[in-house]
Amino acid sequence: MVTKTDTTELVTEPNLQQRTVPSFKRWLKHFVYMPASKRYFSKVDQTAIAEAVKQAEMGHVGEIQVVIEGHIPASSAYYQNTRLRAQQLFAEIGVWDTEYNSGVLLYLNLCEQQVEIVIDRGIHQATEAQVWQIICNAITLKLKEKHYRKAVIDGVSEIGQVLNQFYDQQMSGNENELTNSPIILN
Image (cartoon, rainbow, N blue to C red; front, side, top):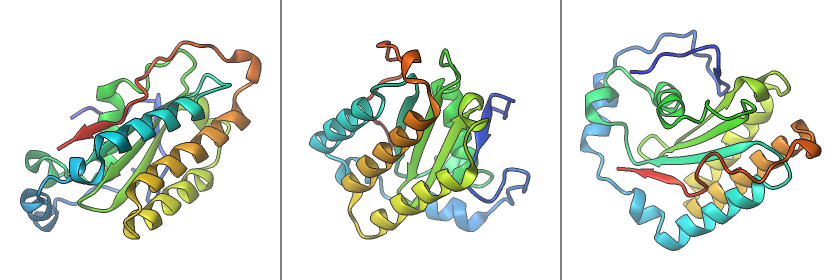
């Protein structure tokens, strides 16, 4: 598992300082979960999400990466909750490795119906955790209402608005450091 460095900050509550308790119940839930990511997010939905990311990234150097995962792999679920999984993916995918430390990971776990946002240190210095928690709560509410595509697109749009407030418009470049397409895992 990738460990947390000073370049990452997980902003959804509760804080990472709380230790994750191994959970057989969580492991079992993820072990028996039937992969459904592609059922909830068709190719058309994935294209619409990619377009929403492209639109949300216009006018600033912020980079948004969407990861949708059906369930945490059974080999990790006993020790790893959604927060730790999001943090791991933030590092593994390289969201932290943007030129201006401007990466944002939007992570959805369908099995747990949980949403996590992990931000890089460049954004963390200028924003408050409450802003990101409000976005997570709105996405979670729409997921529970079974509006999957709308939940992600609206969440990406809100993240883009936060990034627009933070980054100087003159810093904007055309280089796209992360893929706009959502990453769909099991």
